[in-house]
Amino acid sequence: MLESTEVLTTAQMRAIESAAMATGQATGLQLMERAGRAVAGQIRLRWPKPRRVTVLCGPGNNGGDGYVVARLLHRAGWQVRVLGTDNPPGPDAAQMKRQWQGIGRIEPLTLAVLQGGAEGGVHVDAIFGTGLTRPPEGEVAAILHHLGRIKPPLVAVDCPSGLCMDSGALLGHPRGGGDLAPHANVTVAFHRPKPGHVIGLGPLLCGELVIADIGLHDVDSAPTARPAVIWPPFDIPRDQPDRPPTNPLLKQSPLHPHKYSHGHALILAGGPARGGAARLSARAALRIGAGLVTLAPPAEALPDHIGQPDALMRRAVDHELQETLADTRLNAICIGPGCGIDRAGALLADLLPARRATVLDADALTALSRDAALTAALHDACVLTPHMGEFARLFPDLAERLAATPSEGPAYSKLDAARDAAARCGAVVLLKGPDTVIAAPDGRARIHSAFDVPWLATAGAGDALAGMITGLLARSLPPLEAASLGTLIHAQAARLFGPGLIADDLPEMIPQVLRALQKFQSSSSVATALPMT
Ligand SMILES: NC(=O)C1=CN([C@@H]2O[C@H](COP(=O)(O)OP(=O)(O)OC[C@H]3O[C@@H](n4cnc5c(N)ncnc54)[C@H](O)[C@@H]3O)[C@@H](O)[C@H]2O)[C@@H](O)CC1
Ligand SMILES: [K+]
Image (cartoon, rainbow, N blue to C red; front, side, top):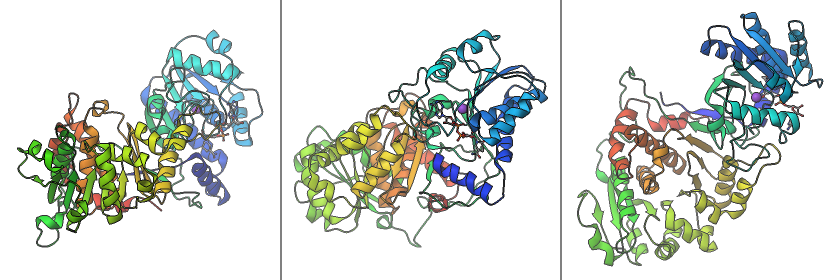
């Protein structure tokens, strides 16, 4: 089934753990035992035959998990070596440390000691987890660099150490520079993914991400903020039984559907010889199911658009947009792809006061960044789809915070930036990338991870995405849902096509993606099933 997962910040995770302990549902020691058991279990699953393992234990509870892993693997016949810090950890970790000391010794956690041992074997990184507050220094930093270089089979407890689990940034490193950090083969995290597992460097450094159940599902905690939601790449099991097509894009509704009941999208195109981008958007809007799509270039560019597809209507719009919008059946507008910055700015001045559902992309975003009055006219039926460069022009202060080398945790994240931008401009903001983050002004947010489809970074892919979202808006999906489902269908189209994709292929893959979606619950029921409050 197409499932969403809540993503919890480290503060939200701590609140849940505290609530579990306060209500007597679990003790800290029990949670630590379960966490360590989950990691040891994943290790034994991957390497069923006992071998050598080096467990690196840090000063906090992450280290406590490490001592549990060491004990359980020793019990399973593994040859265990433990390196640990000599500070007195908290009571739970201290208890786990004592239990290990009843079995074996703890060598100092230094690079020289680590390098002095026999090479090879599995390494377990239990140095820092959610409690990382500052950049690693000294011996620990040297060990983390070493782990980044030698790349033994590495299993990370909760996260590769040094990674800020709220942002996917490496504390103390310029953003994006992950060369010297541990690259885990497997990361075993607890209860729910954290933002840092799925955005920034997280997907690169975590390797395979396993979310282990440590018995916190029934715990209620006072929410500190809305959790974000991740829509993973959707895998469609081959043996999925057919279900009735309840997807709103596919079901026959209302009783006697006609083209207008599926909406009418208007794609505003640009001047002569620059219509390709808008045609891509229009094609995507048609394919995703808008009942009607009209492409609207200025009159002088109308001849450029003769030809396929015949289903596409054309209408010249020079300056008379208000006149065009008098037709209230035009319920979704796309402005930006190939539009030209000046034309986009002029049209937006008429368009935004009409408060129609609107996707603003490319040149429309640049026009916005040049005119504060336009930005002030944005409203909650708008979806902005900036890539990072466009985002920096629109929200320079947020982009600057996001680009700064983080010196303390939790670091400012792409999720924070998208949420702040959406709250500031009062519209849905879809911040593109392999880790696309979509945020609504009220704090709801979605993360869509598409690190597995690098070939989606191709000219025109954004134009197709803008068209897909416009088509879904025409089908009356609310802006956050249209942006989220559009992102999902866009990435899945690329995934199904595979390498070699060009943007023209994306609209053509939509029917295949929709057929697959047809087998699942309706996207609107997926959307409403999302835990968003
Ligand atoms: N809280 C709980 O109930 C549970 C926690 N669990 C584990 O506990 C972890 C969180 O434990 P903690 O909150 O103790 O945090 P960590 O174990 O991640 O580390 C915190 C310790 O490291 C120190 N520290 C932070 N940054 C440092 C730096 N750059 N250099 C040197 N020292 C630094 C802190 O002062 C603190 O002593 C989770 O990631 C998870 O692995 C699990 O056992 C499940 C249950
Ligand atoms: K760790």
